[in-house]
Structure formats: C-alpha cells, structure tokens
Image (cartoon, rainbow, N blue to C red):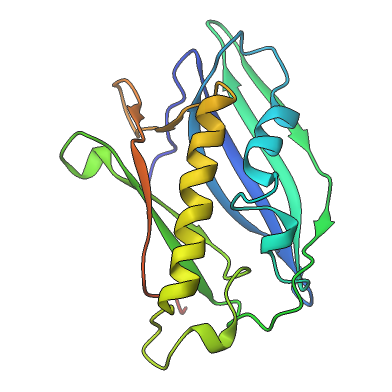
Length: 196
C-alpha cells in the first residue's frame, strides 16, 4: 500500500510506545492540521495534548510494564517537509496486569463523510486494560470501556483546543478529512502477522 500524502499545512504524528521484554516498539498515528508554519516544532505541544492527565497516553492510565516513548512528527510546508521528535521515555504508573501484548485496543476515527476513505483507525497497545477486564471472547468490560472512551474523547478535544485538530490523511490527492469523534471498540483486536 502506498504511503499517506501529507498536504501543505498538515502533519502526521506517530506515537511510540514500548513494553518490557520486547525490543520492537509499538506505533500508532494520526494526521493533524497545523496552526502555524510547518517549520515550527510542535512535538512538545502535541505530546502534551495526548499525554496530559486524563488523556489516552497519560502515564497514570498506562500499565507500569509499558512506556510512553514519545512522538515523531512529519509536517508539510509549501515547499519542504519538516521532521521533529520528542522522546520523554516515561514508564506507566498503573500496577496492573494487562492482556497479552499481541492484542490491541481498536479506536475508530469517525468523520461526517461517508465512504471507507473518510474513516480511519488506530491500534493501541492494551496498556490501560487489565487482563481481568477482558473475557474469553475478547470483550472489554463496560467500566474499562467507559474509561477508555472518556480518554479518547478528552484526547480529541485536547488536540482541538491545542490547535491541532485530528484529520484522516489519504493515500492520494484530496483534502484530509476532519475527525469528528473517536470510538473505542468493545472487543480487543489482535495483530495478524503473515506467516512465511
């Protein structure tokens, strides 16, 4: 599949997480609208908008076996692309036993437009859910799902307030689609790796 296109005035944020005992990192990403020129380093402001208290990547919401490594940004100007990185590498503070690391919390990006092109998703490591909160069918308990949904709602609002409204970037021409809401799915998603 081709790489997403970042039009002028937009950026792509890759959130990086790690887990104890695993060399590779987890990443998830989202597009955003730039409030100022692409040459401005927004890594600290965006990190604060997703990592602050009560937000999706806040250390208080993350199991102590996971770390919020940081963010990597690609921002497109009129004539050049700019890259920035912030790596606080902070461990979570929750003393919980999360589900196996091959499971993910699936967050859907919703827009007011129809069609597959105008929908997106993020796969998050299960760092804020306990193993006991997930039944044998992979269903997340109502209480945990409510907390996760609240964090997602507050994170979307925090990005908007900070001047970086979340968007869906596309694999071709066309303006990015504004994300109107996020929906945390009630079932743990699993990674499907190709076997060769």
